[in-house]
Length: 415
Image (cartoon, rainbow, N blue to C red; front, side):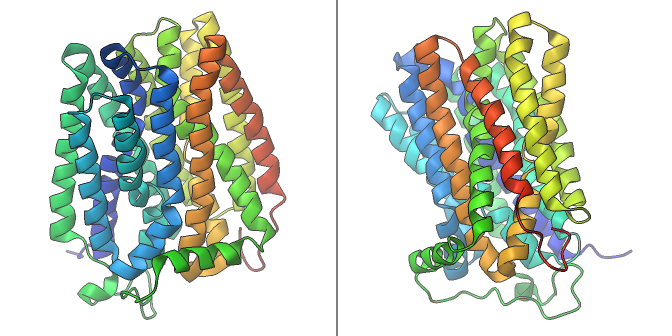
């Protein structure tokens, strides 16, 4: 019997770790109504807390990449998971809106930073040579997998029991992953005397470096800002974050509820998107190994924009068929932009530098997510509707498709 390469074990551990962290972030939408009802907090205040968390986990990306180089992958994963557990535990005892901002804005924001920003490309770059794009696609899709499995469960628990029981469920999964990471995670292939999957050369040296992580992060930024393609990727990723985790992830459930769709049904629809996102993002990773990544991104953004413009019409007409059509198209596209963006970044900046630089690109993604999370709440307060927010996001996606198509093709690359 052929032995499984340990790179696939690392991929599995990383996959489920991202699921645990991802469900914390994607669950924010199902907590808006319960927090409003129990504490009487204004929706814009709750949205602000979630927006700060989205922004902080994004802006922490390049520093997380640098800290991996300084502290090692396993130690960083353990620290980040423990931070998420702490945030979940504190959520159970909060009773003031400023506490929500500290817990969900700062603690959970920073705790999820490693898992949801640079971990996927780091593991793919260090543990894989062959199937690298596929590895990124699988790991990126894991955020949707957590949403797919758990969001309806969380909604049922909230509706029948309490939001606190939902938090306990999330915390339990995080504790389980903490032990698995402690027992089985490795820093690099060299730790166990093997080469990365598909490699015929010596593995990249992933040993701990004695450098200042802040200096390393900003050195990467200073290098990147001189390159036009960095700004095009960062601009398109700003819109990507605005139109996904910021808007859909935070406000979709509430938007559905405002049109008479029950909480569990709305969460189930969101998880239905997760089914197609799991397929779409994994397929995107496979495609990004074979086709021009710029054109992949062009079509991803254009189709996402069209689906976001469709959503308000589907909800206004109460059309179940249009809602399902939206869920399918949007789901296939949700995080499909990540593998091609990582590939383009790696092609331009190289494996060693692309981790930190992709962290800065992802920071732009989360700046867009934060803008949409907070802005969506403000627009709802002004117009008593989310319609304008979703229409604007659709138009921005069309702009993103133009950003990516003008990126210069790299010599000798399919990018």
